[in-house]
Length: 166
Image (cartoon, rainbow, N blue to C red; front, top):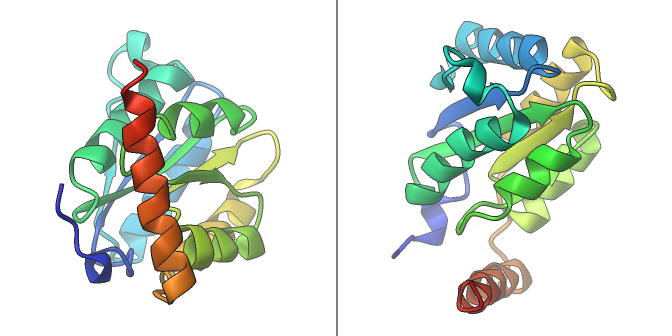
């Protein structure tokens, strides 16, 4: 996949995919409504099937689409702790998922580590705090300095090498 780094800098020009398991569903809906009310392109991933209510399935729905087109999509995914959702999402190429409990973590995750999927734990954050974290994440660009660019490409190379073991 040939992705230009300048296309990865800003999240506000992407469609934000939002999902969460049965523990994080209410938080995910609140985030979706917050984004919609603030004119952010957003989509709530499919909750129509009880088979897709597990954090593994919800993470897959978000991460697979971000992985296929990281220029068009970014994501927000939650579960009870945020650990499972971040672990599962990070399995996908071109997905940089980090669990963030607050705005400062979200800012650093975006600025330095190009976090394009934000994970949250519904047991660790209330809905208003989550909206503040999402806002910080959305408003922080990936910092395109030499060190971060080199790390980005190094991570992609490591992801590619790791898939050879599968």
